[in-house]
Amino acid sequence: MTISLSGLYQSPLKPWRLSVAPMLDVTDRHCRYFHRLLAPNALLYTEMVTTGALIYGDVPRHLQFNEQEHPVALQLGGSEPDALVQCAKLGQQWGYDEINLNCGCPSERVQKGAFGACLMAEADLVAQCIQAMQAAVDIPVTVKHRLGLDYEDSYDFVRDFVGKIYDVGCRVFITHARNAVLKGLSPKDNREIPSLRYDRVMQLKKDFPDALFILNGGIHQLAQASALLSEFDGIMIGRAAWHEPYLLRELSQLIWADSQPSDNARICAEMTTYAEKALSEGAPLRAVVKPMLGLMNGQAGAKYFRRLLSDVKRLNAQDIRLIEEAFSGFI
Image 1: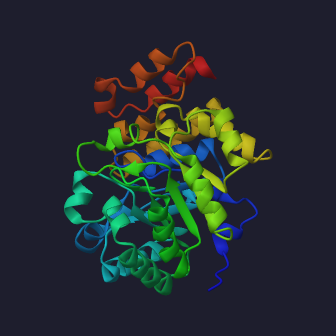
Image 2: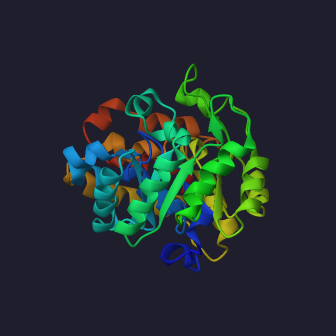
């Protein structure tokens, strides 16, 4: 079967060259708006949204996003084809540019629900889910996965997993270059302790040459990212986008020389305007400013910047003037 990439992935901007990982309690719509200012062309992902949350919960609360976020992808957590189809259709109706299935999260929550990284052991089921979603929507359906489970060290395991999904037409794989250890390691430990195996992802790229492999895991520095971009179809930044968001601006300028990431003055103005709108819709100020806390890390005055944006009294008072005051020494 030959499947050609379409739409988002044929864009001249190739947004998959740089993406920001889906991170629970991090990549909400306020965070994504901020990241868009730093990386105008990057692909942004939602937090993982479970099928149950959409089918039985508050759909607008989970799916609402800002038009400025495009291109933006919805990551789903689930393992039942019918439920995933229903949620993928919702994602397309709400205007998302991609649907991504989480096959990499190792948390206790996903283990109880038998999805996330647990799906690495269910390649046939994943293929069935992907095929069903592809038939239901007109936007790309992709997979985010790990290299293996627990201490399984066979390349054949991940090759066969990818192969079964490839055979039903999936052509975009976001690969966290570590195993997921389901027992004994926390989600944080799973991002740090299992060995990084970039060579395994490169082998996948060689074995499936017409698929796209986006590398995730352990990417923290500009020079490192630049080198990896020459080898892989794209890179996905995770916690580095949270702790050092300025890296997104640097990477954006590296990848898209003609792009115009926002400087500090524009970020201050844009986030102040955005905060006014978000607060009028009921959002707490602390949720709006939280993604900005690491922006000045490594610079003189960074501690004051963080302290001011974390001022409990002013946050509780919804005092948006603190944004301009925090930036005053950096513009």
